[in-house]
Length: 48
Image 1 (cartoon, rainbow, N blue to C red):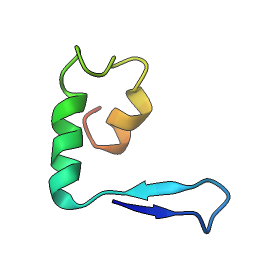
Image 2 (image 1 turned 180 degrees about the vertical axis):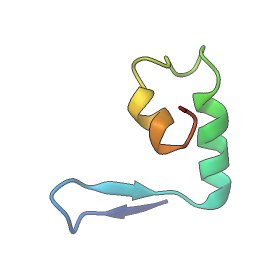
Image 3 (image 1 turned 45 degrees about the horizontal axis):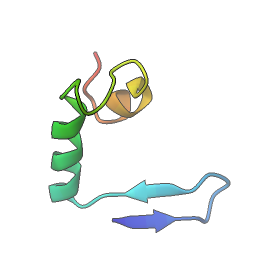
Image 4 (image 1 turned 90 degrees about the vertical axis):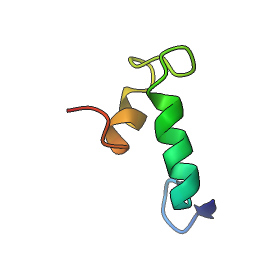
């Protein structure tokens, strides 16, 4: 994971392996509420 703080809002960048783990976590409603984390799900391409 890499943190970029050069812009106004800091951004995290994940390795491919960690990004896959985050996607898996976001698909489990018990771990991540789909409504609360809709913005993350959209960024990961999980929302249509």
